[in-house]
Image (cartoon, rainbow, N blue to C red; front, side, top):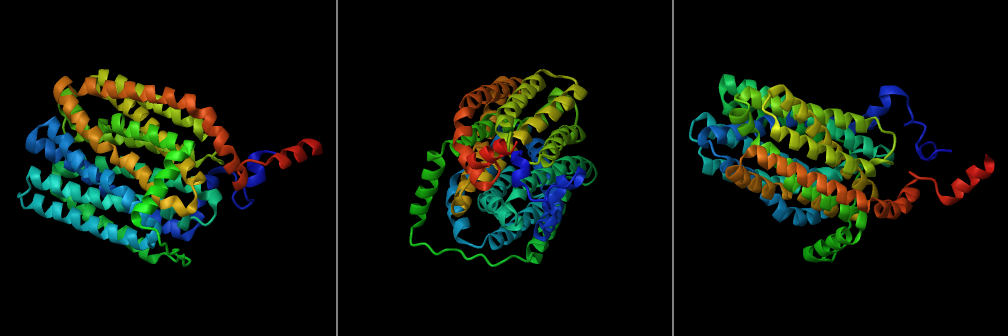
Length: 442
């Protein structure tokens, strides 16, 4: 008897493509999936438009890094405290508030840009405000997945579909933004983004959720924060995954802030070239996410983490050497695939093994590693690109990713040993008694 057949409900074991979409059988997740898909297209339009606006106004690699830093540093500073609140409050209400605030931020950015009053200082401040919103939004969003998907067996599929949704938006959004910028300017992208938030707000309000009693606590916020940190730092699987994730966020992911330089100076293109490059990252990431959605079990994801991190590193090194557009696009596919595979595999394992009463705090540290380290990476990438050039900066980033993958691979046997009892308790792996019975029964 296999681990999969012993643990997967008959209703979930469906042949063909239906298995890849099984998390969508839950109404609340379907609502979230549809609303968030629309909203994220607008979000990716804003990301590309912001980068191009900064580059058009200043032509500075350093200021690209500074804007990236200002948009992400609030997550590093406030995400751990936000995680405590997420464990204390109704997660849907937190998400409704964050989406409303994000909509207002995008509309403010649109108004300033369309009236030609925007300057670099206002971009920095509005980016910082969005970063503060994200500090609460990301851990709430990750922790809320468990409430939308009622069967824990479907959680990994929900995470993979969520990643597919993000990367479908990553594919469509930048490509659409390149065309919109050429026709109407960056302000139109910001306006479309602001309007798109209506879809996700409506989907959240339309959900029918069972009442979840939030247990009152006498512990202070600092006490709960310390408890969450002790859990993350003391449990080797979570600690090791988050350390590699933080390193990749610091050294690997910030290549995206340098894309305007590659599009403009290295490959001699314009907004369309930037859209193609970011779209190629999205295609690679979408292929990666769909491959994860087709998986029937979380087993085997551990070894995918170092393999995908090494693929990202190799792709970055070769991208830094390329001066031909089609070659660069192919390498962006590889980078997008490796980047998403590492992120989604890490997220799935952590979400599977974490204790429910600490989920918000653990996912806040996940957000801290994911987004919180990125501002330092964006700033470092900007400084290095200013000093040694964007191509060499990206090649150095790739080398660091490969080194991190080798370190994680050495930790993998210990991680597997510690995770196995949890998988047995969850029914993902058969227990010792089941294995003995299977062997006796032939």
